[in-house]
Structures are given as structure tokens and as C-alpha cells.
Amino acid sequence: MTSLNQESAVTPLRVLIVDDEPPARARLRDLLDDCRAQVPNAIVGEAGSGLEGLDLLASNPADVALVDIHMPGMSGIEFARHLQLLEVPPAVIFVTAHDRYAVEAFEVNAVDYLLKPVRSGRIAAALKKAAAGPRLGREVFDRVDPHPRRFLSVNERGRLTLVPLAEVLYLKAELKYVTVRTREHEYLIEASLAQLEAEFAALFIRIHRNCLVARRLIRGFERLEGDVAEANWAVLIEGCQERLPVSRRQWAQVKALAKS
Amino acid sequence: MLARLGYAWGFACALAIVAALTAAMATVQSLLGHNLDWPGLLVGVLLAVALAALMLEYFRVRSRAFSPALAEARLQALQARIRPHFLFNSLNAVLAIIRVDPKRAQDAIEDLADLFRSLLADDRQLIPMREEIALCRQYLNLEHLRLGERLQVHWSIDPEAENALVPPMLLQPLVENAVYHGIEPGLAAGAIEIRIGLDGDRLLVGLSNPYHPEHQHRQGNRMALANIRERLLLHFDVEAKLDTGIDGERYRIGMAMPYRRAP
Image (cartoon, rainbow over all chains, first blue to last red; front, side, top):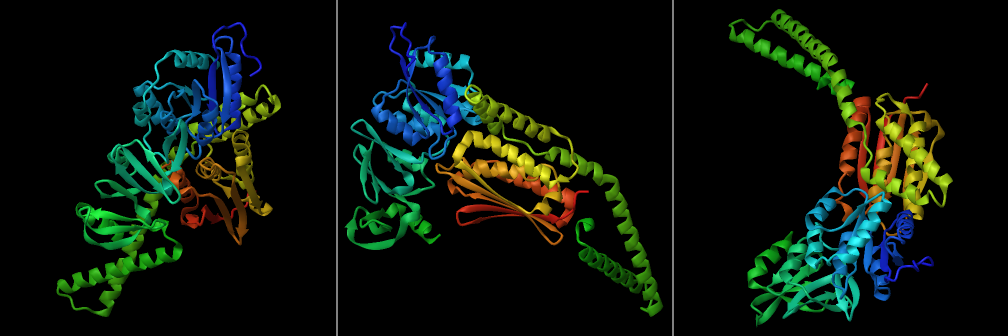
């Protein structure tokens, strides 16, 4: 950080490094130092995980993020997907040792990546391209990730909060938003229930036109009095006082799941 | 197939074949109109025994003639492989430390070279467990460079068991799996436990690592296990076994095979 290029009038490119392996971060740091004359850059932070990276970005905005794909907790690709919720997301350059499927997906979608061991020549070229090129959209990063996300990201006044899917009790659509309910909190996200249902089919079951419930938390059913929301039954969820109506259309399916 | 069975079962099967043939002959005799008499039956039994012996000998000679080459070819195909993921990450880590710690970088390259020499070796002879353990330690040095404190390894080795003869690359792929499936997916530090001991004339190898259920889509574990199982079968036949299981938060592998002492 002390050797910022003085000759160049250009503002240095702010770079965030995200990799779980300390030597891999050191290698990127060295290479960024080496190419500083060519591409003025300043490292704004180093993170050992995607979660740490998002925390860092909240207080240290970056223009470019160098992101390892294979990380514990949250993959680099998922990290990039969450980034797209920021007002001005950094350009993402993935770094990977050997991930044939991911690399194929990057090629198809014109997402930039570096191969480990990272070569000094390549990093300067990638930084230049990232600084000049247009930002890729959110859908591009959704497309390159074959796995369901492990977190839902909530943008609260410019700050990203990540909610682990394992903590979500139910997802309920209201007008423009989807309510994400956990034991302690309620969040609003901009999403379509149909997309959430498709992505997290293994975790949630649809009980109503407007509601998905965590499969493993269904504890039983309660008969509803009168005709509430086209439903005769309500679902009981562990850790939640609310009674969520099961529509007559979904009843057979939900009951079958409860039996199995 | 008979060759795969243990001695007692093989003997029982041979007897069963003899009995079946005798019965068949007796039926043929009675169908041909002969009365069922004792001398006749005796001749039948003798004929059946001779026939069964001939058949068994034929299959034995046939399996002798075909199987060594086949087994050899299978062993070659089964020669364990190291993940490219590991190779490239290790090279990346070595590049990272060359400037700050050249000595350690040299050691790492030497370990990497030894590891690949063993991997590429076309040697299908049994080796002393001692050598396999040394190889695993070199491999773990490399992973330690990359993963630092996140990787902890606890060895418990009976010195006598180090003399046991085992197929080459018996343990290394399992240790590599333990790192890949047990340590890398964890945010916190995790420990791999390796126990090598003797129980009478049996060599016992146990290995365990933290279990991450959400990472079960990661490929490779089953392939390595099937590979080792097959090589154990080719070297020790039915006398070796390999079991896996999940016990609470740990994934466990247990292997047992005859203890053959290195000369």
C-alpha cells in the first residue's frame, strides 16, 4: 500500500482479494505489486471467505474483486452473485486451480478468470480489461453457478446482510417482495417465489400460491375453521407460532411429504 | 468364482456339485430302466467325483492362464491418481513463498517431486507400510503449506506395523480425500486421525476426518474407495476388507488385511 504509483495521474484501481488460502493471497499481493507500474492499483482488503469479503466491502469499496472459486462456507461464485445486489458492484475476476465446469461456464458467459498458479502477465491484462469493460449483469453470475445458493442476500440501505438458507422457516410473497422469515427476524427481498422455488426445491415445499415452507421443519397440521385463503388446513412449523394455510390445490402434495 | 471363496466354502461347493451330479446320474440310470442298485450307485458317485475333479481342474488351469495378465492390466488402470486441483494449488502456494521463504519452497518442490515419482511409478509390488507413511507425510507437508493451521493431523502408529507389506498408494489417496472432503470445506480447523496397528496376524488401518454433509455432491471419494477396494482384492483376495461409515460428526474408514512382514 505504501508503494502507490506516484507517476501516474490515474486513480489507482481498488482491488479486493478473496481467497481462503494465505499463500494464494500472498501470491496475488506480490503480483499486484509487480504490475503496479503497468496498472496502478491499491489493495483495499484481503478476505479469507466470501462472508469476510462482503463485510470488508461495506466499508472499503472496490473496483475489482479477485475471487477464488473453491472456498469453504460460500463458493466464490456465490459470493459474486451476492455482490450484484450492491449499487456499484466491483468487477469480478475469478481465480481457480482446476474447475473444468466453472471454466466452461465462464467462457460461455464471457466472465473473466485466472488459472492458478497465477501468471504475472495475465493479471495485468485482466485488471485492464476489468477497469475498462462493462459490468456483467446479475443474471450472468446466476447462470454460471450450477449450485443453489447457501445464503439469501438482503440489501438494507446499501449494506448486504446474508441469511443462511438453513435458518429460513418460510418464504412468503407479498406484492413486489418476498418475506424471508427466520426464528428471530423478518427480511424483505426482491425476488420471485417461482425462482426461489426452482432454486431451493430440495429445501422448501410450496404450500400455497404465495408461500414456500422449509420441508424439514413441518411438524404437523391443524384444521382451519371456516374458509380461510382457499384452505382447510394450516401447517405447523417448528419454532414459529404462525399458522400458514395450505391451499386445497397443494394439500395432497404437502400431506404426502408429511407422511414420508 | 470358486477360486474367490474361502477354503471351507469352496470345499462345500465342490461337495454340492458332486451330489448334484450323482443325483442326475441316478435319475438317468433309472430313466434308462436300470434298477437302482448299490454297486451301480457307487459307480455313479465315483464317476461324478471324477467329473467334478476334472471340471474344477479345468477352471483352475483356465483361471491361471488368463488372470495374471488381466489382473496386471487392471492394476495398471487402477494406479491411483492425484487431483489436478491439488497439483495446481500446491504450485501456486510454492510460488507464493519463493520470495519470502526460499528454503521452505525448495522443500515443497522436493516433496512434490517425490509424490509424483511414486504416483507415476509403474510398480505394482507390495511395499513396506513405512514407505507409504513417509509419502503421506510429504503429501501432508504440502497441504499444510496451503491450509496452515486449518489442517491438523494426529498419527498413532504401532512400530511393528510399519513393517507390513501393503499395495503402493494404499493410504495416500485416503488422506487426500480426508483433506479434500473433511478439511477444505470447513471454515474452522479440523483434524484427521490416522491409526495403524496390528491385531494378531491382521494389519488394521483406521482413518477419520470431519464430516460435512452439505459437501456430498463433491465427486471423487467413491472412486478412490472403489479403486483401493479393488486393489486390495487383487493383492489379498477376500482376506482384505475396507469399510466406511459416518459416526456422529466424523467420517470413518477402516481397513484390515493380512499382516505380511517385509523381509
